[in-house]
Image (cartoon, rainbow, N blue to C red; front, side, top):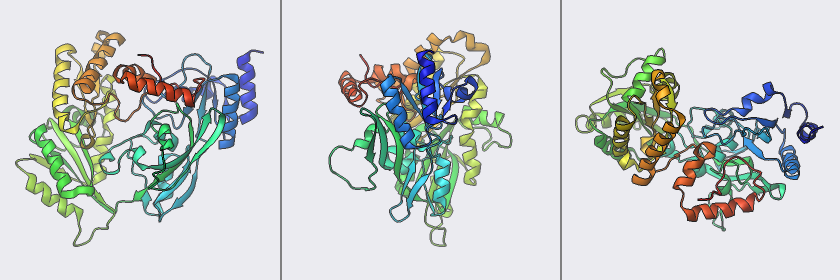
Amino acid sequence: MSDISLTQQKISALLGPQGCLLTPEQRQPYEHGARYGHGRSLCIARPASVEEAAELMRLCAKEKIRIVAQGANTGLVGAASPDQSGLDVVLNMERIKGVIDIDPVDRVVQAYAGTRLSELNQALEKHDLYFPIDLGADPSLGGMLAANTGGARLIRYGDVRHNVLGLEALLIDPPGKRLDLTNRLRKNNTGPDWKQNFIGTGGAYGIVTQVVLQVHPRPQQSATALVVPPSMEAAALLLRDAERNFADFLSAFEGISQNALQSVLQHVPGISAPFEPLPPYAFLIELSSARPRSADFDLEKLFGAWLESCFGDLILDAVIDKPEVLWRIRHAISDSVRQEGKVVAFDISVPRSRLGAFRQEAVALLEHGYAGIKVFDFGHWGDGGLHFNLAIPEQLIADFPPLRINALRQEIYDLAVLKYHGSFSAEHGVGPFNQQFYARYTTPEALALASRMQNVFDPQHLLGVTRFAVDK
């Protein structure tokens, strides 16, 4: 019997037939990422408890088998996918799920890492609370911490990191050791904040098993509009004015390009054009409040009066509609663009005051050196994030082999990072997909520290496929 077969038998004996998936048909959904990343695993391990997960880690450490942590497998940088060797164990947390406790007074929830975002919010709804990280997918909580997800309402609530009070994680050194950081305090200034090592690091330092989150009152009223500014400069002034007038009530400020709007209208039935003709750029603005609507506090009336005051200098046109109608347009963009050809996606951020200038220069770069590619950009203009997504028409795909696409990526990232002092990954993380760019743009000093940190947490390099320790 081969060493591989023997190891598979040991894992199967530990976790049972439901906890150890071995056949190609069983493994396939877990071996392919949502967008990037696909490989072959030794097996898919689905422990039913934290104790089983710890035992699995002890076994893998003894056998020197790499563990790839996986939540709902909705990530977009390949960080939860095995490589092509067939030697990785994918540790999927979907069976370690459920809400442990909700404290409505403290506005704190504790849950297992495999709990889905939708399941968490369903449990919180009865307390008029919710976890307001707004995403197009339905990720697991552990995956959200591992990627430090952002979303469309980051301008109001921050990213996941800003809402984590505590967590529990399993370490690989010593193997399977539970690290209890499930503190519920908002104020705790007692030295290093160790939980931050497990947020945004893709499982490279340990496997998150429980999360403690601060949650927020559910909105009782909202007001939404799709507006057209006369220029990008005016859009920046519009954002400033919205923040000045509505402060914490401003929950989203999302940009949508003309091409993105056109793609949604072409590929999604039942959506009518909000403007005729479609403008070069439109912005989805949302206000929300946990305070119920009343005669002396009505967000729709306040919003309408403000929009009217902005007409001319800051707004050329506007459509006010139910939130679900306008958000349907915004959420349909990614799927629509996939039907335009081969997608080359960018998840970048730059200082929001310079988003317009960056976009103008990036579009000119494409027109000069990559004719035929269409830009379908959209994103979180309120926090400086931009999904600068491109599509290569089918008839031109042969003109853009992998080497040329990689050169394009590097040019766009150089522009964003080196000239505009932005980020090559605003909210998707690093993972294998972004590994080369992490090495390119991270300073030697930071890489040296990352190498020392990763060697402390994972001296045998058995955790994950993301490497923060990189030779430069």
